[in-house]
Amino acid sequence: MAYFLNWKNLVKRIIYIISFLTLVSATPPQGPGYDTNAKIKSVFIYNFTKYIEWPKNYRQGNFIVGVLGESSLYKELENMAKTKKVANQDIELVKFNDSKAISNCHILIIPPDRSDELNNAIKQVKKNSTLIITEKEGLTKEGAAINFIVQTNKQKFELSKTNVEKYNLKVNSSLESLAIVVN
Image 1 (cartoon, rainbow, N blue to C red):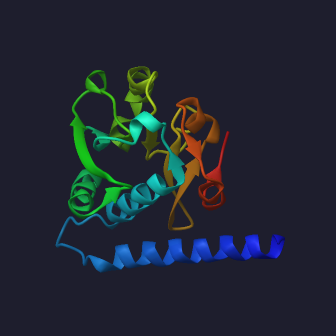
Image 2 (cartoon, one colour):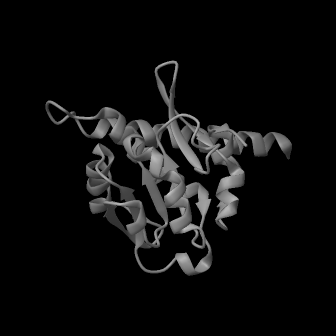
């Protein structure tokens, strides 16, 4: 039985990697200023939605992804939202110009140039089930649930299970196995 479970996890990982590579290679670069990392991160974010479980009342209506300020990631997420869904929910993007304007959302993305607003953002979503994603090293220690980093020229992500669970979210063990787990 243990062999079957390990084999099953291996198959899931292979499918995840193939899906990731297919999505990344499906869209060619779009001229000068095209941000390949933004495309990769948008695919990661979409896949995170498959491995994080939100409370029941968050599984109806639109799936809201908030972005604090300007980010090349916003455009990639906008493209993805045109063709993808999270379970049966349409993806809705919201741009917050200020951390005080942040309202209820499923995912909140804080770009590197707005990292200093993380504490204010946490206060805004404190009572919500919001997955906070950042892009600057060390921010999982400051309260982010997932943080994008680059190690050995590869895009990776840190995961703080404690910070995820703080917002009444559940993490699938498959996501933990793909992450750099931090406390």
